[in-house]
Image 1 (cartoon, helix red, strand yellow):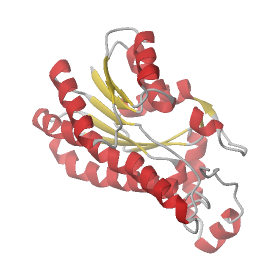
Image 2 (cartoon, rainbow, N blue to C red):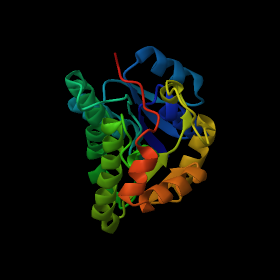
Image 3 (tube, rainbow, N blue to C red):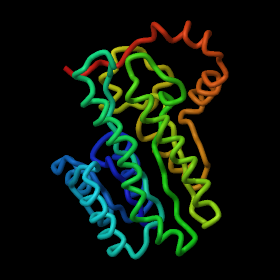
Length: 251
C-alpha cells in the first residue's frame, strides 16, 4: 500500500509515518524541514520517498504528488496532516499575517494536497483522502479565531468532498484530534484533558482510516466533549468559554 503524508517531519504526521512504515507500506513524506524529514525517513523500515517543500507552494506539492504516483504506481491513502497553530486576535492588526498563514497551511494546503490524487482514485474507484480537523474547530475558542476557523473549515470541506466522491468509490475521512503530545501542544500554557501520546493517536487514526469512518474524534473522551459543545446554546457556551485559557500569540 502507498501512503502520502504531509507535515511528516514532526507531530501527528511523523507518528502516522512511523505507524504505516512499520506496517510495511511505501510512504511519500512531505515537510519543510529537510534535516528532520531525512532523519525520519532514515529511521523507518523500508524505502520511502522524501519531498522537501512548503505545502503552501501548490506547484511544488503537485510535482511531489505526481512523482510519488509515478514511483508507487497508485496511491491508496493521502493524509493532509500539515498544520500550524498560534493564538490570534483580530484587534491586533499585526496578526493578519498569522491568520493568513494558518488558513493557507491548515485549509488551503489540504485542497492542494488532495487535488493531484483524486482523478486516479476515481478511475480506480478506490482510495482514501484524510483531512486533519480538530476538536478546536467544533466551536470558536477565544484567542484562537484563526486556528478554530481553519479546522472548522477543514471539517466542512471534507464533508463536501466526501459527498462529491462517495458515488465514485473514493472515501474521505475526517480525523479530529483532541490533545496529543506534540511540539505544537507543548507550547500550550494550560491543562490539556485526556492528553494522549502521538503513537497511540496514530494507531487509532489508522484504524479509523482503514474502516473509512467519515468523522472520528480521537481520543473518544474528547468526542463526548465535542458532542456536548455542539449541543450547548450560545448563551451557555459564551458563559463557559469566554474566560477559557488562550493559545500564546506569536511575538
